[in-house]
Image (cartoon, rainbow, N blue to C red; front, side, top):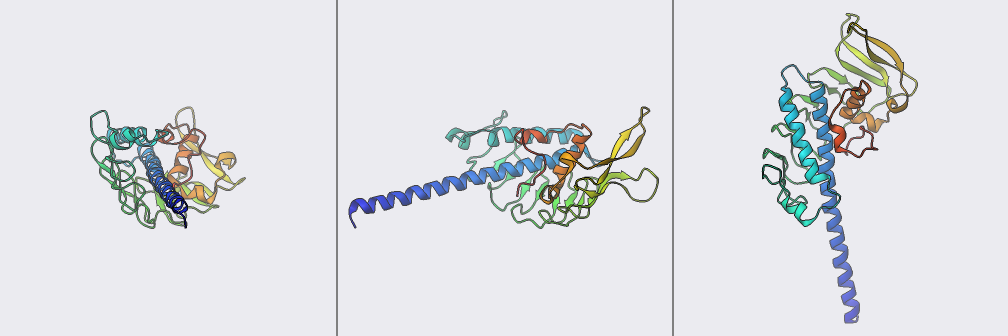
Length: 270
């Protein structure tokens, strides 16, 4: 083997290794940004449908924190050396000492993730854990107010709960199943008002909320069509589906700032 041939082999190996490492770094950042996007959905749902004791000012502050982290770590098209190592919030706190490999922090100094793209605990800006082992799945997922959203996230056919504890669905990720609103039946019978007993299925019916001129609420049957026709993957993203519903009623939220304008709100980042 000639020296030139050996040199070419070594050079090709080095370039391939560098390319692989760069791809892994980009994947780690993309993973953390997808996690941040999902967190924004969780926070938006909790802010829109709070439990009685939730603090709306704290929810608003947390939304600002997520937006700032998103702006500095996830919105840049290219992570330059300065962006990667030296990004800082307006208060002077560092986002991370290395966005590819080290911890990410919110503006108040609260840890978001210890290492991007790894199986690590994920925190909200108020210090509440969202998930203890995010990459693993099959564990409890928490709302920002600390209440459990589900006891086995990333799992099909598991129950999900609203931030106030009401049931959302008993079978997430499954089409043609029952989904519920977070309030009692309007006819006075026991149980929660149902969104649909065949949620996500084209042509089936769902109960839409309608208000009279004097402010009284009643349910009106409508057909599931268009964007309300959902796949099993979309139905696994329960907070995304809930935000789609609140947007159906023209309730604003901040989660749309974390995703491309042509994307659907549904679709979990895993």
